[in-house]
Length: 521
Image 1 (tube, rainbow, N blue to C red):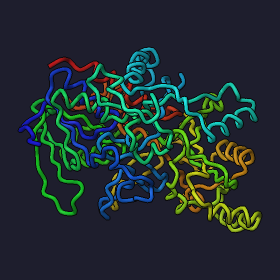
Image 2 (image 1 turned 120 degrees about the horizontal axis):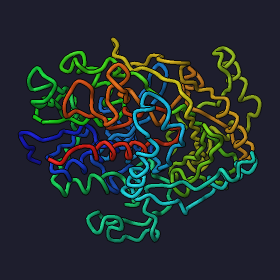
Image 3 (image 1 turned 180 degrees about the horizontal axis):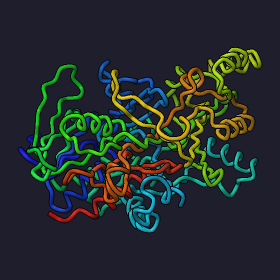
Image 4 (image 1 turned 180 degrees about the vertical axis):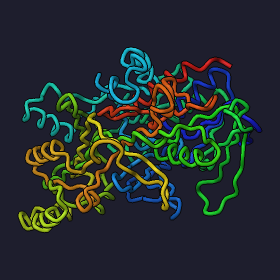
């Protein structure tokens, strides 16, 4: 691909924010380059199971170039997506709209009537992502339905709205979404392997909608490249443009290259955008708000794995997240699954212990196996970890925030407001225990939670939040960066309150609104 000498906009990252920005800017007549650090995976290039770590995990230092990145911090362990299409490659397709509390909380509260103003953009996002209600309820979903009945929440159970083409199982058809402008699609097979990358052309990833349409309008996509620096052309507010410096991300040694742009959109996700903004604030973009890296949220999540002791169970069928329970006004629960054979996570699991005190927790951890030795042995040596497990994803829109800050060993976390995120959310452990009793299961969690008390999240948010000025946020209500012209942050970093549900739809909707404010060229 021959790159232009200068673009109207360079977009850093190709996830939900970057993909929306690429298409909408191209429609307005701008020349656009998308720079993505991950690889471009298609169809059968995705791993069959998560044991194929070279194509599943992203750790370029040891030559792993997959679609999932695992980041360990002092206060949280983060799972995030990498590749052309960003988080859409590895997420569970789920597109819930948050409740009203989300729109009236956090640093963006009062900047607009968000619930009303974003309503049409949520509809647009659902339409663009090909959202439809899941018709493939399976064993894991029925167990969730039984759980809802047992706690008096039967009406709070529902199938999820997901970005999947169901159609006729295994049948390929011409583009069903964009009047023939999109790629052909194939009916979902219900294999449950959405989160290791859809090999069957059913998942509506961003390369099949926003990015596909953007390329038809001339958008260039440069994969396997990581941005090192962004600087103004002259000492100014960016009105004269920017120089973007990047290098190959999949080589140990790579020369840097630079390209010019009139505008920049940061869309590399929290763990891409915020470290880069922190770096350039100290060097080339000193006018950035001191709020960069602040108001980081974990969506107040818990990821608890319930391992069934029954060999005839197959909890891997269906789609990655097929149902949801609204437990209360603040909390949601979803059963997450991997496709059969994807048992990698068993390597990093330990029994769930509901104890905050470290010494008591370790004592309980040592005692637990002796309380039911045969059952725990069955859990450890289960024949197919994916078939026998439900990952319970518990989410809340209650607030606690962190700060990402540069340190001697790179970017790390600090407590910002309130208490640190906890691996011991009582409501999460309680509902997991109830699910375990109903399903004859044992509960395990990532060893980082049991040993250190550090929680895990698949939805890291914030760090470049909205505010009325640069003392309260990094961007304004239209996603423009305070202090610089033609510069935007449009990804999970902009989310300014805990949604309490999977955030991909909200990122897409807010990105659509931001782009609607940009004038035609």
